[in-house]
Structures are given as structure tokens and as C-alpha cells.
Length: 592
Image (tube, rainbow, N blue to C red):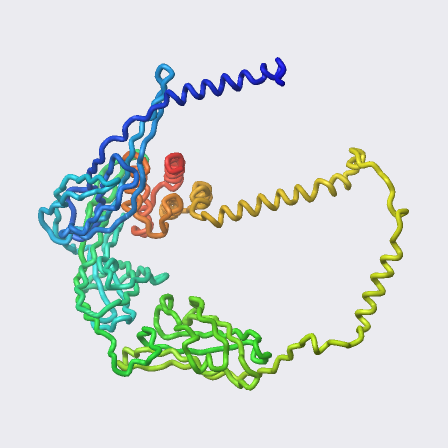
């Protein structure tokens, strides 16, 4: 039965519950609105081959299906991600709460015009929740790019006739005789579904070279191109968009001082086009266990240990060499090699392997099945030799081993045997301990109170284990969270890392490198090759305004001018660091 004091304590909770019920009853939600779609581009005049931003803004849904842009016959289209931009707000008028919801989603694409002229991006259908909306058509003027006397671009392949599966080296060389900034290279062939493309680590190279009898600075980029299927493939020209030096002008610099500085204007230059003929691999002479290796291959093997019992694990290290780029090379499953499975137990799976200099090393564990085995047989790797145009087999050398029989003890082997001395000692020792410490006199009645904790040693003994467990649990949970979402951890630490790297940056180029690392962590992008164009669209979709984007563009301009001008475009590093730090903090508040 409740007392008056109980009812007094309960009354505030009842009043709170009633007020929440009244507020909840007054909560209403504004209509989300019909499904609509609107398109926008980053420019209405572009060069053929130059990438530009195409965005579809959807209203009325935050989970629309990705639109199909296959009908864009005059453009190449690449999806660059999307995300919700829904807005929610709450208003309370005369005690009535209204939630306003504006559902929305943004799709970002990169388009490239295929030909010059006045081109139309047609209306694109967008579907969500069994509803369909159309974007409005847009017109784009595409101009034909052309090289100049100071800027040229060349595209090359190591071979113009190759076999399907053969590694080719694709090389792009930029020749320039004046300072440039904001370079953006587009290579259409790397997006072709007929090829696998790999970046060559450390492939960028800068050095002076002669072209047509004139001295140029060059920037050389290499990639590995692997044809997936046979056919005739025209390799479209690559294009390079950049701001290049074109005379001088008197203007205010980034810090408000009137100076004479180089005048930059926008250039888009094309490379040459190429033709590639890819032949199919011949069916005649193809080994039964051929796994698609094309080129020249060598194979060696090592085993450890080489003296084992039947069933003991033997670690087999297989080293593959030959191709110039080893990262995509895989080893066929060893359980398909009968000469090996006849004498050894071999797992069906094999690891991906690791590149070590000019070798890729694969590790496999095998186990001898009998004690009469004298060697690990040669491991075979069939391949198609493109130089000899015939199939060959790379083989490792056999590895001599010694296999001893394994004795298995059964219950019958030890039945009826007397106890060993060790067993008797343990039995006697246990009896001695038991008889030395028996009886109730060893126990004393002692009450446990707070006095037992008066000693620091006793307090540490009692409180230490729980505190240590709590600390260990905190560390384990924190490590688990970091491993579960490393991108989120990098994003949270991005600003602190920027501060450390920018503080010791000696030049505008290094400050830009620190800012690229910051943006890469925040946008989950690879930072090394980020350009302003790469980050402008995603930042704008996340709410970064044009003023901040202009300030960011200027940081890219100064940083890249420092790199390509050979020191001639160096800015006031201290002032640039101050501006970059200020902008990074403003962006950090928006990108949380």
C-alpha cells in the first residue's frame, strides 16, 4: 500500500509522462513531396576527352536506384559516388510539434565528350519507390583540343600486337616548356572493360628530354595493361587538362601584394591515338593444366624441414619470376598435380603470395603419406611463351627428403605394465602434502571488515584485478572498434595529422601534400594523386560552399605551381600554412 510520501515522489514522474504524451500527440510530419530529379553540370563548354562533373539531384526520396546512363551516346560516363542530402527540421508552435522532412539524394558522374560539336545530354529517368522522374536535357559545347609549341602529350604501348593475357606497358609522356598547375590526366583505355589495368609503383619520372629537336621537361607515367580477350582495339587519345603559363601580368597575389607574376590560362591537349591487335591463345598444344599464364616464367622451390615423420607438416616455398609485373600472378592449385598428390597430402587452397623483389613467393604446407618417399617431385607451371609463340612448362628441381615411420601407441601397448618411478613419486608427493596440511586447526575465524582494506597492499590486492580487467576491456574494445572501421579512425585523426605534417612542411608543395592527406582521410580517397577536381564535387555535396572551394583551389594552385615550377612558383610558406590551417578547421566542422 502506497504512503503519502510515495505519492509525492511519484507525482513529478506522472506529470512528466503526461506532458510527453501531449507533446507526442501533437507531433506531426510534413509531407515529403513528389519525386523530382534535376541535372546540372560543372561547365557548359568543354574539350573532347576532358572530364567534367554531371550531377543528378533527386528530391522526394533518399534511396533512389542508380540511373542508367548507357543512352549517353556522345559521352563516356563514370559513376563517382553519391549520397543522401536529406534535410530535417522541427518547429514547435503553440505546443504543437511539426517535423519538416525534405528527402533527397545526389548522384555524381564524370562525363567526357567523344566528339566536338553541340552535344545534348538527354533526359535521364530516375526511379524510387515505384515512381519515376525525368531530369531536364542539357546542352554541352565540346571543342577539339590541340597541342601547342610548349605543351605536348604522347601515348605509347610496348607492343601493338599482343596475345590475350599478355602484359603490356602503357606509357604517357607530358612534354612542357613552361610552368603548369592543376594537371589532370585522362586515359580512356584504362576504363575499357576489355583490359585489366595496374599501376606501376614508382613509375612517375621527371627528366629533360628532346622532342622534335627542342628541349622539354617531361613527366612520364607508366601502367600495366593486360588484354582480357582477343580483338581489334583502337586506343583513344589521352588528354591532359591543366593551367599553363602564358605570359605575365600585374595583379594581387594570394596575400594582397601587387606583384608581377606569370599569367596562366587553361589548356587541354590530346595525345596521339594507337591501334592494338590482340590475338587469341592457340588451342594446339595447350597443356591440360594450363591456367592462363602468358609470357616467360621461371619456377623454383624450397622445403623445410627435409627430415620428417609421416604426417608432419613440410613448408613448401615456391618462387615465380619472369613477368615484369608480378602482382596479378597467381599459382595454380597444387592439388591438381598428380605427381605431388600421389605421395603428399596437399590442401586445395593456396595463398595469394607476396612480391619480393623480382620474385613472387607462394607458401604451401604438404604432408608425406608414407615413409618410402625420397623426394618432393618437381612442381610444374605451364605457360604460353609469347616470344617462341608456343606452350612451355616451368619446373622446379626435385627436393630430396627423409621420411621416418610414425609409431602410434594404443591402449594394448601399455596394458598391464607397472607404474613408472615418476608416477609413484607423484602419488607419494600428493599424499605427503595432503597429510601435512589437514584438520580444522589450520582455519581461524576472522571477520572481514573495512580494517582489512586499511593496508595499501591489501587494497591493491582487492581492487587491482577488477581495475586491470576494466583497463584491459577498454583497450580491447578500442582496438576492436579501430579494426572494424579504420577509415573512421583515420577521418577523426585527419586534422591532428594535418597539423603535424603542415607544421614541418618546408614548401607550398609539402603543405598541399599534407592537405591532400587530410582530404583523402575525410573523403576515403587515395591522397597521393588527388586533384582539386577530384574533391570539389564530393565536398560540395557535403555542404562546402563556393567561397571555401575557391580558397581550396588556390591552395592547390600554389602547391602544384611549387612542384612544377622548380621552385620558381614558391609562395610565402608561413602565410600559406596559416590559411591552409584555417580552412582545414572550417572543413572539419562541415565534414564531421
